[in-house]
Each structure stands twice: as structure tokens, then as C-alpha cells.
Image (cartoon, rainbow, N blue to C red; front, side, top):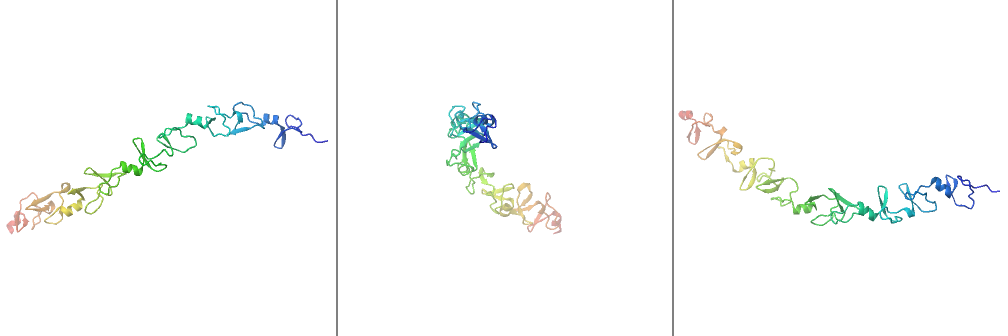
Length: 279
């Protein structure tokens, strides 16, 4: 006589019946559903094992219960999104929650790439330079008057141009005689050293550092022959088209300072009155 083959739960014979094995133990379909099947999220009934059971994040639906919560269309074999764990078709989700493109004002569909900046969103191809119309992507850009510009276009359209090299000034420059210069272009006409941050003067609209200006244009001291700049409040003595530094304006013989004192000249020598008497 053949050994009995019964359901582990209800003990009914499984000969000639459909059954399911669970850990090598046989169960009739009814008992298996009651013991192990998950309830449908919509109707709360346990899906029959032989029916289609759809699952998403450990949640289960009958195929006929898996519907968009907004329009109630079937989501079987269709893309869907969830909001607060509720399934929605892409169209309903987009209309309800997706952001609108700041350029074309159309919905940015879930799953598509978008660009964001200061609370606004764009389709990837709509996030383009306002001047050349090329997508900006991940390149650097500048926003002006609510429009986006790639750096080359912004420089061509808005950046000031250096008076010297005619190229755009994108970072800090120098303003001289109401004209813009690159910091590295604003140099001494004589020695070519940068003048930004140091004292300088000009002659015939050309800028010079103080050293070059003095060497090129300043008169020379009649005593030491060094340039007399007269800049920065430096004092000097002028007499008969000759100049002296204050420290150099001394008696030729006794070397006493003649600044603020009387003096005489003899054969183009500057002498104090005492040395003139001895001459």
C-alpha cells in the first residue's frame, strides 16, 4: 500500500492535487496562501499563488490591483514612480510633482537628467548659453540678468577689455585715467615692473615707477649728481638754474649747511660768508 502524502497544515491528501513545497514540506495551495502569502496592498486579500503577484519594496499587489492612485490606470508593464509609497504612472507623477524647465516651461520627466541652479531647474539641453545657445553642461558659467552665459561668451559681451592687450578683464584689474588695465599689463614704461600697489607718476600719459621717472626726467643735484625728484614732499634748493638736495646744499670749503643762511658764489662755488672772507 502506498505511503500517504498529505498537507502539513490541514492533513488532506495531496494525491492528484496542486501543492507547494516549503522547506521540503508539502502544503496545499489554500493553506500555503493563508500561512505564507503577503496581502495585496489594495484589497488586503492574499494573492493566489497561481495568480500574478506583483511586488515592489517588499509590498505586494494583485495584477488587477496594481493601479495608479491618481488616474487608476493599470501599472502592469508600465513605468511608474512613487510618492509617499503610493504608485503613480509617470504622467500623473510628472504633472503633480515634477519641476518645470525654467527655459521651455515643460515638465522635466522623472529619470531624465536635469540641471539645477539657485532653485531653478532645466532640461539638460535647455541649460544653454544665452549668447551661443550651446548647452553649458558642467562647464563654468556666469548668470547675468536671469540669463546664463558660458565664460567665453560672457567675456565677449560684458567684460571690460584691457587698454594694453585688448583682452577681457575677468578678475581684478587696475583703473588708470578712467581706463581698465590687467594688473600684469599696467607696468612702468621704463623698467616694465608692475605698478599696481606701488607709487608711480606719469609723463606724456606714460606711467613710470618713481625710480625710472627720476633717472629719466628729474634734474640732477649739482653736488651729488643724484636725481632730485621733488616727489613725496622731498625738499631741494634751486639757484641760477641749478638744484641741490637740501642735504647737499653746503659750503664748498667748510661744508656747513647753507639752507636758510646767506651765501655767496665765487667761480660757481657756493660759499658761506666766513669762507668768502678768507678767500
